[in-house]
Length: 138
Image (cartoon, rainbow, N blue to C red; front, top):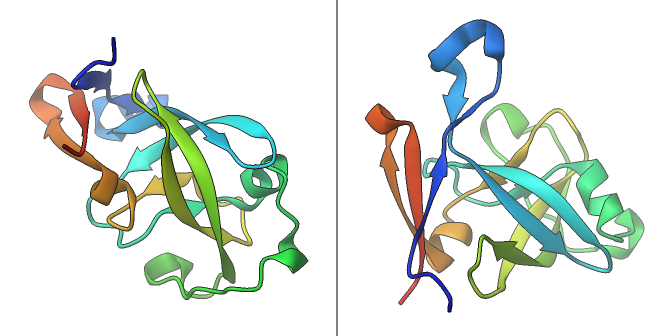
């Protein structure tokens, strides 16, 4: 039976900062030409999903074969990015297709943003309890 929603704990990104470094990091499996386990920052303020360079390579993508580019913004504005589509498995939910801006840097984690993670899943953040809840779209 597939769960209607799942709860995940906030994860410490820098133990030296204590609870100030807790973030909604979602464990998931990304499936391209190869399957890769990853953890993505669930970021409702990010306009698009972003994939670090090495994870794209591990997924089996070849940079020169990805011809559709996308412009990133904010602190990633100077980073070149290409569009790739991966199948993502989150918890016990059915797999979904997620489009990513495959960044030419590893200075970031996977970012799960409005296009199209939040188009596939509803998310409720309960920061006071250090958990967040994910539910597939109806």
